[in-house]
Length: 211
Image (tube, one colour):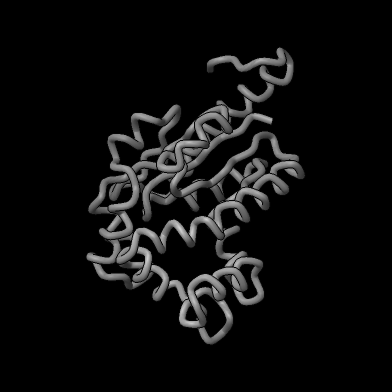
């Protein structure tokens, strides 16, 4: 299958774009959603996280205490590495399993830190970036989550900058502050149609062609 890596900074709107692609027949694998499943009550990562970080890392409902863990990993880079050492292999395994079962017209991997990880370039055929300006990112995340601007900017600080993200992109969906939902859908649809054509040519020729 044609494999697309979809990424963008926090608040860029990549989930909405991925939902468009899924509604048009693509198979979508969201690594952030997988991480949430692994750290939900009874999730496979809860036991190892409790063993590594203690009961204070687990919320009363049995899920990962995201606020407490967010504070810890920003204060302690080693804690971030320890958490990633638990989660990343599990996320990769579930991602592989879902990819093997995918049946859509093309396959989309939604990966928030796709550029930062350094490994996805060799695992996908194209990288698509959902792009918006930093001020819009902050405003959107504040509106949906109630996080402070400082907290949001700390999250953004571990993500690559806008210029680096765009430099890595094969395709771009602009979703800045002035973009309406209809405009975002139209921009996404244009890419979907191009990818479907590329996937069809790929299937017939056995190799990639540039559209």
